[in-house]
Amino acid sequence: MASIVLYLNNSAKDITFPLLEDRFQFLNPNTSSDSSFSSLAGTVRILLCVANSPVNSETLDKYPSLECVVGSTTGLNHIDLAECRRRGIRVTNAGDAFADDAADYAVGLLIDTLRRISAADRFVRAGSWAVKGLFPLSYKVWGKRVGIAGMGSIGRRISKRLQAFGCSIAYNSRKPKANISFPFYASVQELASNVDILVVCLALTNETRHIITRDVMKALGKEGIIVNIGRGSLIDEKEMVKLLVKGEIGGAGLDVFENEPVVPQELYALGNVVLSPHRGGAVPESLLRLQEIMIANIEAFFANKPLLSEIELE
Amino acid sequence: MESIGVLMICPMNSYLEQELDKRFKLFRYWNIPQTQQFLKENSNSIRAVVGNSMAGADAQLIESLPKLEIVSSFSVGLDKIDLNKCKEKGIRVTNTPDVLTEDVADLAIGLMLAVLRRLCECDRYVRKGLWKTGDFKLTTKFTGKSVGIIGLGRIGTAIAKRAEAFDCPISYYSRSEKADTNYKYYPSVIDLASNCQILVVACSLTPETRHIINREVIDALGPKGVLINIGRGPHVDEAELLSALVEGRLGGAGLDVFENEPEAPEELFGLDNVVLLPHVGSGTIETRTAMADLVLGNLEAHFLNKPLLTPVV
View (cartoon, rainbow over the protein chains, first blue to last red):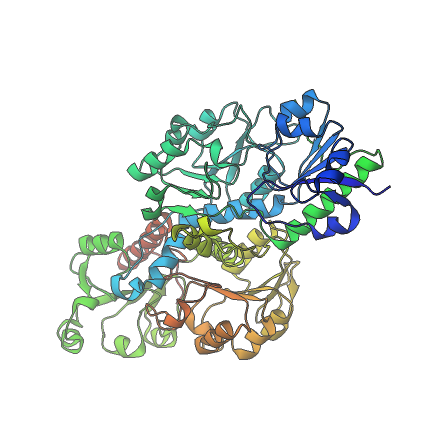
């Protein structure tokens, strides 16, 4: 019997997973005919969630035999994890498919923000170098104190990279991590008060929504920098924009926003802000790796073996 | 020391300028309309020259300053100073090594990430409002890419250390193989370029290294290769680089320096696979202050007959 996987794509993204299409039989509610669909909907046991397609109670009610949700992203804030737990449904994410590239991107945004790379590139392309002369001085990266909010697989990779730039690392997460020797702070507020740069790579949950408050950002100080490669809603975006516009924090490197693809226009005029359209993980190799991980999860599920990148549901 | 004449060649740093003005008799060369006349009238009082990466002390200037005792460069590169002439005349030369190593290496990696991950292009995409029309394309992975470094000096070594943290295999070319390193050595720049994906220029500019990046090297690097130049503009045959980029024979470039600063070739402005910077390798507040303090410290040491802090000659 072919392995039937429910293919759920209610995101705005036109994404395909060619490696999976060969291996599994996809049941797509958006394209299946009514007759075949309704009989299979009652028996399908595993769901592939494309991008940030919402998976909530309403979704789960439609597929009463579901035992597993296979995510295709690192963050799972679009999936009602509490509801999955309640129904005994296991959930997997993208594992470390995007981790290296997300870490690279965080470091790139950090350097760009402090050293004004994008702003300086604009300066040259506008022909201003020959006319206006010296570009304003920027800020040193080497030796800065970096606070990582969220020390998961991405946070660890960011730490390893930044140490090579002489940066000292401190972190916050729900609990101290056993095999991490960097200083731990119990709150993001305390963390922000003790670092020059705050890198946000937490999972977005009900508890972490707007965890980066106005007070946390102010604690970074007038030369403090914030880099967000997690989710836009981790930061109180309205407050952040006000602080940046008023110059109360030193700058920001942002790959994610509260209401993508909408980006607050007040940020466009700021030379100490680097804006990115959520491309932290978007390299071909990571999409290939993602498919490998999803295949491994689905095959393990059907073989009753341990899943590769199962998320612990609390 | 207020009577000692110091000739500052071009604007480079307001803190340095202010301090030179306070401590010495400062002449600002760039404000002088008739330089020949000026040199005739003031050459007897000028005992020091302060230059930088854009302009320093060539043979002609040195000859026209008979009382010149020291050239203190606001840079680590010495390509704008006629070192042989200085040696001949017993003129001391100082530069600003070490204090800028980290900044330049930080920027080299920043350029690599900006080119491969299209950071500047992404930022432009958002600012133009294009994200609302669709996602930006996929970019190019940086972790694990092979990095080839031309010149394994202070800056080259610092770049290697950072790139290693991204699991990049490191190889290098220099005039002779270094004994104390595990990085792979290639005996020619072409060999190096053929065997790496990201090629960084981190050597000093001398007559031998002028146009060290020529058409052959660019072709060896290839359509997926990326060139990073944080050395000097003349290291690269800029016309060849331009045609390679436009024709797609080279994948991309991150350039902090150009042959004819502050002019950067306008043909580059329309390309999406390049990042262009106005020679800001050491351009942070912290580092430029440290560099200025070295220049001032060297000048003071010289005029107080103390050992120079960072002598070259």
